[in-house]
Length: 512
Image (cartoon, rainbow, N blue to C red; front, side, top):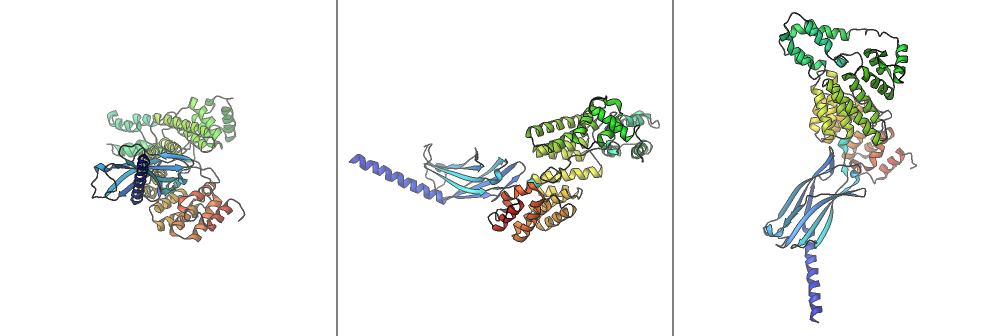
């Protein structure tokens, strides 16, 4: 009889304890910043703040909160916890726990859920008295990842990535087989100055940068006006001379000989370096260009050959559906562009190298290379290209102010205008975002991106009619955006509305 009474007493006490713990769990307050999770760069960062009422925990109790992210049947757990023991607390003061968390972003996480798992324990018992689960955030906003450099995303035509140097151009100066030897010979032959006075010019010539950068570096050297007048300007005039010096073979002969070289029937040195370079530029297909450049590499290896070969591999990588082949082509591009820079560090190869890292998802390395390319040239046209790329990466990384600085110096083409609109949108400057998206649409209405941007603004402003109008235009023009819209957290308030569902059905050719 006494044993039964004792067991009942224990069960009663346990029941009371569990009831008290449940009440304690109900009194905790959990806050997350930002309220809507957002992808910035390659990660998602957030902060959690927990407020526990005073005297919530007795001296023998412990509290712990661990976030957990669930998506697509996978669970991402965090090692870091927010925890506290009752014996360390002032019973008359509330308890505040704060912590910063970060998780790498993976495809599919935009549809996931962030949960807070809290545990209450008694004494040193490893088994929690109570475990609760609370939803903190649903989905991840990935709007910043819409930033474009020219990568393929559902456009009708696959864009061309990278910078290609034509065979006869001032930018190509020094990138051929002889490098800067011709200019060195001219400087060495100039007899009005002793060799010691010409040495600093030769050192600049052998250093990094393109011709515009080297000439800019020379402006600070003694005797520059004289050297510029007597040597440099004459060199530039010869390169820019119109019409171009004719090739020693006709266009038809060039095509026939190039085909023979590609097929291995003729040696590559059947054509001169300049003739082969022209043959490469006239080939319409990436595979044909690759074959000629690989043949050219055997007899005329140069910074120009390897830079353009890297660009060919880069664009072939953009055009394959095989992940394994894509990665191999990007590896080939990396190798070729590094070979180009081994001759001398030039902005064309460095910029194309940045694009390789961009496609690989390494945005930090992409930014580093774009910035280095910008530093290696004084050519206005090239600098505009590199500023645009830096702006796109800055958006992706969440630095919208820096993105605006770069994009204001970039060419005002449809891609950069869209990126400007995107940076303004993410900075909540919807007025200027609207202007830039509309300017982008005026220049190019085929990609769908400017209309998607206008739809994003309409969604945030609660303008449902404008949302459907612009989103419809975007989805009919772009398959990537068509697949993105149904799970885009920017539209979560509209996902269950009939108008939104009808729009998606229409875009997919389904009967309403």
